[in-house]
Length: 369
Image 1: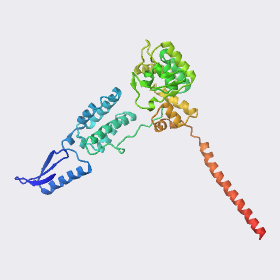
Image 2: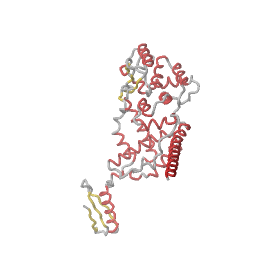
Image 3: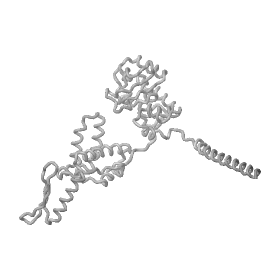
Image 4: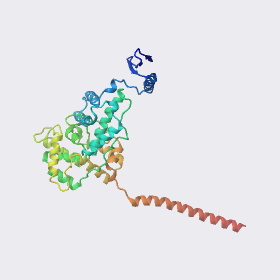
């Protein structure tokens, strides 16, 4: 219900009640302005863009704190990443009301992060997280629409993964502490991630059938996606290597520290960094995760197609596989030339055959005449 009434002091008071029955009012010098305001409010209510005026004054910082309170039941690493993204957003427009943030502010924020030297992958991840926070603000009715969109997005980072050679992989294996050499095998020939390798239990490996069943990540957290739990077949030779390692260190976990306890990711990272310095040609930023890239290159070099590589790396979609490794598949210029040439040759043969048959028909007709 909405109305416009003239007050004793000569001003015009416009009033309306929202869906919750709460009354809102504003005063105007002219009746036409009061009516225009009510029309705008009515339009917003009808189109679903209405926002409570008091709610609209909620600042970005206030909403981020509220949002984060409901996000704290996630994995600790996920929460830390969200807090890092929120701190960057607060630094730029934390004091602004949610409703005041425009796409131009978002683009300026992205530009400042780029100028500050943040990695493209970090900027993209932080952008997506803050965009999610604003999307939830829309869902909660705090703002009618989000200033984050494809037009403001910096886009995902495009970078080619470093692929070690086979000699470098074995050199890294030999340079690792003896109790962690199996980690290189798990990374380079099973494609496990750091947390997955440290969380791999002896019970997750079928040594007889030759299958690794990733189930948890360090310390004992369930993997995030169904794709990550996809079993990975391994050859009997690798199963024997892993079996001998497990027999030597006798633990519930495949990877252990020097005294037989479950190996923590930070310990594996330090060990790989120390061994990396002893291997010629490995870049300073080489990580355990880069062994997955070697695994992918190995499969591709031996003729595996996209779906096979996706399954072995346990990617949720083939798009992820192609975005990361498309440059590793062979692109034969001669092969594409031959394919097109074969079609053109078939067409030429068809035309020659049709032409020869037509000439013979004309000769036969002439002889009969």
